[in-house]
Image 1 (cartoon, rainbow, N blue to C red):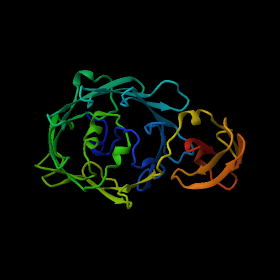
Image 2: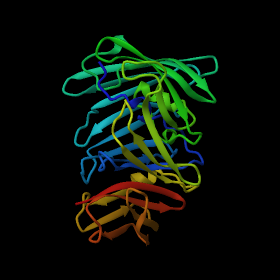
Image 3: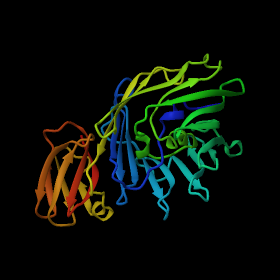
Image 4: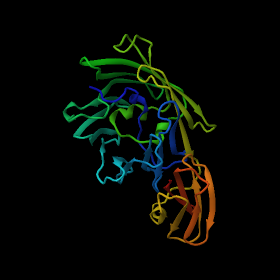
Length: 351
């Protein structure tokens, strides 16, 4: 029995690559439709890899959970820990394994939603390193998983993108196979900036362009041939980065929502682990004022919103700076410090 909506075929998060000339995703948020108060904020390490992702929803002014990402010595993502604020043990753990060609071979997820559960998917490839299947491992299922309980088989490729695939799942009356076709728009994948947490995420990770539609090839249990199972519409900046992604009605998702993305496209400036370790805020959460302390002299301080817009900038001569917050609304902000081309950020909550 599947326990997540089918839209996760396309829209989950993906593997984080090392630093490059491409922009870094700072935040993504729902700006229209359901869940308009939901957003995610991304934090990077000194190697340009996503290190933590903070999640806020339901109109809260501070994050209630976050993902912590861990890498091995070969720069490969190996664990994602879903953490609830105030708890020291992860609520969910994804463990990622690789084959001899450094392709992801298995993703095992374990969690606790009141009782422990596990699930896993195995990936297979052809001789050209194209993904051919994402197979649910029935022997690894225990408890009541919250993950995506389906397999993808007979994956076909065209122009560097998945064009056809079979979704095999239990839709309520035993195993069913949905034969699907995908159309692409030829622009960049926003998912290249994200990270993988479940096996089905691989479907978008291995595509080079954004998926516009998923349609049924034949008369399926969920609709006749040609029916749109999923639809997206995108807007882009001049550098082809995705600005918004709109979800349109389809069989897999009947909602209409618009998701907005904000980036850091500055060149040559990366988050610095040592600088971040020396950065402190107190109090946090704060009311009218916050003290910023950096265990280094002379730096630039910026207060930013979650869209990356600079609200206040100042040059600090010593180590301590006081920031007046009285003119700003309650909510979450970013405090950024920069010294000698190195930069670090941390979150500030005003309430």
